Image (cartoon, rainbow, N blue to C red; front, side):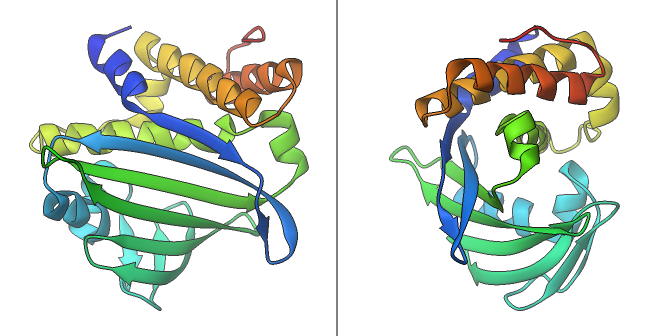
Length: 213
């Protein structure tokens, strides 16, 4: 595994929780990472359409509170909150399902910027089968692209499909899946169930069979 991939995995903080949303059982993942950039730069990179397209996906719509957004070939929804350089929240509507994303920004004591993402969805059979890694691995791939963009803005955008098929990509996905399993175990999921779900998540992303973590 390349040093950059290992460093990315080690930089992520992960947790899993079981809140209620609209009176229904839900499941939430939270991941956080500190970036070697300013709060202003991180805010612009995650809220300006021209910047988002350089590390994630092209996005259209009105990127403001109350506005609708659409990621090309992916989720769309409504921006439900937006406080500059502090917080934004949105609905994540895809495949006929609705979940909720909450993004918060803070500054470390040495002036770096910290990003915290919480993605909450109604409890489902999909969660029981794949666990938190189904969503968590996807966000980690996105944050790796964001990190590269912030550190080396002139570098071409990470091709997630090609990366996922590479030895380093498969290693990142497998290890990320395992670490999400550990977060699930810490939140009370039985060991065997969490590790079996992680193996299924790895197979889903890589197309390769994986034994339980």
